[in-house]
Length: 511
Image (cartoon, rainbow, N blue to C red; front, side, top):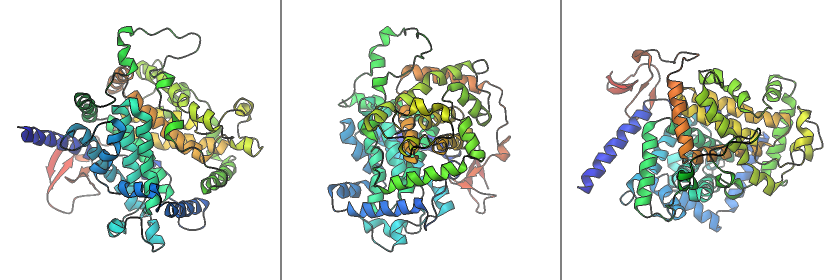
């Protein structure tokens, strides 16, 4: 009987996965910058020096962990997070939880396929004709592009998912998810650039997953399974404990009632590795990006960066509306506007612990320069630079909008990425501040999805969007114009050259 139930569950999972496969997953080529060309660029030098650092770690305890982290299997990730959540995760004993890792892995591999083939970046061990930490997989990946890093994608995505399922250990789960990317560098299979892109891809995938009702159901089933199995942290969140006191206090003055209290937010001081030291190669890259940003100030990118300075929901509504497909405003989309108004303060709030803990000097302060937007210099001079609140805010808004309208995902993330880069161009943040600010946003996004108030308002916002009049028409206006995928979920460019069954739109078709 148990075997029969397992088969039924697997079949249901397969159908839901195929449903996702028959749509466009996030395409990193469209919203992330390309990897550096191998040569003399500062970004490549940083990649090389990080590779050299990783080789030095191989004989340490960190190197042994990297060996355990390398196999791209659901069991690898399930095992790594078992100790974090206080419950052994296996395919047999906890199938609902295990399925989440299997799902994250399969979809991460699918999302990586397009950029890996497009860029075909040579892996470090191939470039230098050297061996990796674990040679077992060298032949497997020798001709597979390294950008973005799949291990980093699955690791960060798994950390986000576990933070959502078990919020009580969100910081530990996020730290473990982050560590998978570091292991990929130590192993010699990936560059630092690959890993950074992989984590950002994981963020985009989580937004995409949540656009599907089937994934929300999977999360709910996993939570229930965790509680039924007596998970060590299977307790109510404070929001659930206070459900009887559901009435919220009216905000005083201009303050906004947020969904998550400050002390419940993920703490960047506990799951991020912190800003680079001034002697590190990453800081050299930070400095190079700062100089390149300054050079862009007289041009369109620089002017856009100044226009993007304002951290407010109205500014983001203006920026994202043309890409989202609907005018976002208090009058046109009141439910969505309410959602964004209550969400965006958490993105900046979640950076404050790390900002205060590290108190990294901002570029213009460190270098005693002026910025492209002098009006904020005095106010921000004594505040920490790492991680960037602006980058976090813009990325979080893009994640929420992409969940509501996944067809606009690539465009939204491309714009959110540009918004964050504007902080480098204006001189208020280093590149590493901005990169990790985006990770803070995804951590907040995951935590929000464990909050009933947020989920209720999100449901109202989705219903409002689905009943609205779009600014632009969908890309495919009929079944015959929809993209075609094979049964493995890989998009077919042009007409299929082999006879068989394919997925087009929501139907199976014979070609």
